[in-house]
Length: 247
Ligand code: 13P
Image (tube, rainbow, N blue to C red; front, side, top):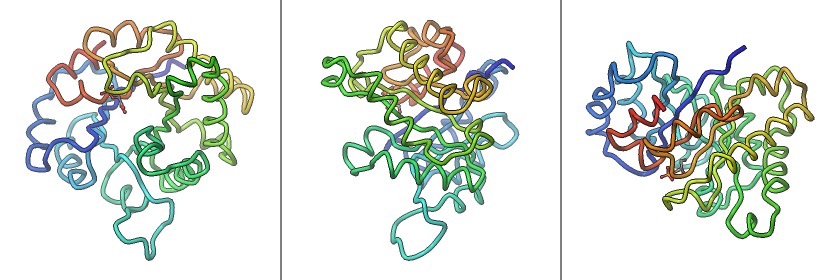
């Protein structure tokens, strides 16, 4: 089975709810049909985005969730709430959340299980810092993050997961990993999936690259054998996103 190219735009904390509908509508008819495009918008813009993608094959994703179904967690949003409003994907464990909001690999695992339980597709982010790359421990770091994130997740469920390899040093810096560097780590993640589960799981799971992807480098990155699309920050907020998606 051929894996589909999945390109998710992570808007982070950008764009107003009132700008969202028009921005998404501006892409209509511009993406190649064989691409799955996901707009991961701020929580307050999710309902507008869900409305804007009606009648298209684009999907909407959230940028975070709380792992509990409901309860006294002021300010938080559960997987069930996201699914109920028509959200299909959710980014989990982005390096900014790990860095600024203290998210851990164990927390990522709890959130991933919660998302899967509600029928959402988690986009689980992993990636090394520059210091870790310089110490030559990139593969160990990424293997550990992935292994803990997938703890207790069964074979049936894991096929619905997207893993995004985002080297922290490449995020928002304009320093893209070379396609060889990105492919090496994405392949190591796929090998780990074969080790933890089996070849069929390894072949089925979508593995994205993220970190300074733009209209010029997307084509080469997404044509690597183990890179099935991207998680895109800055370039997803511009018209250039069309070139990124179409690669
Ligand atoms: P940039 O594409 O802006 O580097 O951001 C990458 C990212 O963090 C996507 O989640």
